[in-house]
Length: 392
Image 1 (cartoon, rainbow, N blue to C red):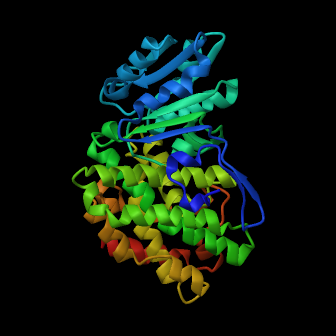
Image 2: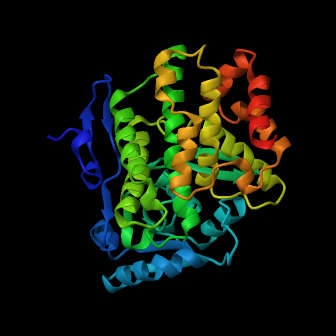
């Protein structure tokens, strides 16, 4: 049997193996179809549900780029499908109580399969519904914009706060690069930013291992590192929608989700850079402002956290310092891909940025370099230094 490190992404569906970390890992995703022309891969996934009700959800944009084709494929192959589309226009769909409630109002009794056509919010809504109803769901990816396609968490907005609910893994993932390479460039940049965030997330994981004795899996870390490197090597292709670069990007995003699925935690994918992103998002939502795409914020937060590691390098374990690239290197990668680099690029105010560095460690109970800085009594100096560099 191949090692998981030797498998392509589609071969990883349902994989189970004994790992060098001492645990037995299993990926409870039965079907993965990613690549050129992969949309038709939904048909063998949906075959066991023929003759039963299928509920498909999308929004105006995702229905136009992939929803109509998905609906046609399913109906032409004998499936009974109820299709519901959020009419969001140019607004971003927010996965909150209102959106979720509307979906449950539309869900018919005896539905056997949920098909979500979209990316971040639609994926989270679909998997949350699946977790609460026990109905399996397939995600048809429309943009390489985030790493949640293969994860079992569903970040939702509740009372204005972003909360990561435990949800479920997808029954099937369909990622057609013919569709995703034509996604809005901002969403492609967001996916690149989310992948780049793994640079500091992995360093945070090693920090928690070294200082707090937290469980760490070399195999899963290497899985993410390999996917991350291939995306980094093709960063210039992101800016011009190169098909191979987009394939490597969606593979990296999905492989990160696979690593989370194997571990049952999001450690390989999410560290202090995600805490900053979530802090900014909650502030924007509380003030009725467009929150920007998740991965755009993560990408911008990553060189910031890289600088935090650098400012603390004389205190940190050597292997942790080696694991984190320089701020300059991360910023160079973002520029090469054409992605936003600085907090000012998305209109983040100076006071909000400074407050986020001081307080983002409280967003979730996870040890990170930000909490280390707090415990070391260095967080204010760090916040002042980085804020001064960016804002003057």
